[in-house]
Image (cartoon, rainbow, N blue to C red; front, side):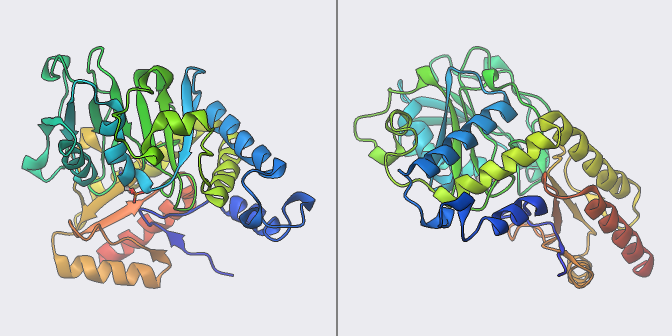
Length: 359
Ligand SMILES: *Cc1c(COP(=O)(O)O)cnc(C)c1O
């Protein structure tokens, strides 16, 4: 069996150990005589799985008791609508547009109220994170929305933006569980699970309890956080198997030192790659230094044909999915929690060789 080094931005690598456990339990989960894929979500055996998954996630992210954890469907993109539908009370919300996904979230919010873009980095193709100060936020805005890590452009907020006493809402799809975050600084954190936590199909929402129950009357029931919370994410059938895998991933992260250890390892991996890029005469990182993402490292040669050649030869050598997002081109190495340090070291070695051969 030959596993490749998979640099996909999402769905992306899962820890091999997790896949092996899933394989072992695939057709007979803990003597239940069935697969997790086949069991009722209301059965005691599945109830134990979802409860343990939530408990491990809370432990991993240090989530306080006054926050609910919801296991939903529809991807992070569905949250772009759910956020304004649930949180707009005055009908006003402020958005930071630092990339494609935050742009989509902003556009969706405009359908439901007075959404305002208070800062953007569009002027420099989203290669940096704009600075946010409390005076930029409208006094009567219900919340401020940010995308914490911009998956496509490879940028990340260097620190939690200061929005004064406003409710801060963050899309953390591509950085959740990559490092510790102070959950209390956020009103809502949401993430599609397929980047750093599980297969596609699961969306996780962490929401402060007092923010629920203000949804507009005509909100679709499936998007109402209060309904989902009151039913322990079981108003309807949850994405059972993806939740089970997320549970295995959380156990793996806890066993490997939790989020402090994830951060240390992720910093090490990102530094290896950025250090190489900063000293390369062929490759160049595209994100500004102070805004660089630890998870998605974007780079170019400056020559589209050479970029193409690089991706092709890299794939042949076992480094796959390095092509940048179709909207920006170039290359992107997504190095989420499951990517081992050796994967990044081997990639840099390959890049150095490519550089030598393409002078
Ligand atoms: C991938 C991604 C999304 C879209 O997620 P879906 O689950 O495909 O809807 C939104 N935001 C960010 C930051 C992402 O990385």
